[in-house]
Image (cartoon, rainbow, N blue to C red):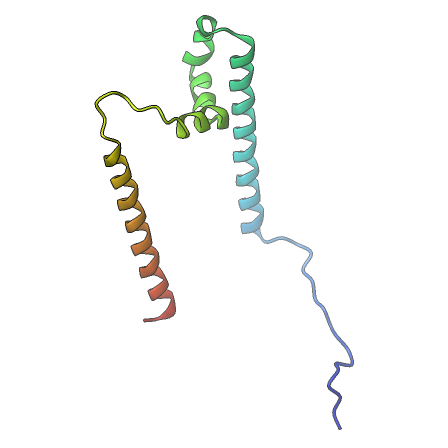
Length: 117
């Protein structure tokens, strides 16, 4: 009578990463380093220099690039709730709902294609 329990188990493990995995990890590491350096640059300028003395740091090409990649500045801009006078806040809600509707429709199309329907 055969046993229900396996007698031997053979595990095989690959030690080397594929070239694609190494490239992906390198790209992610570079992006994280750029974000860290840019955010550090932005925080250094914000903490140590008053508004009037920041101009040389923010107008150079490197300064503009660092400020555009800064997590600190970009989260402040994304979560800013100030509305200019004369704007209709309902239009922003309609834009969000429209974008979500389009994303939902495309994801359903891709799911249908993946399932072969």
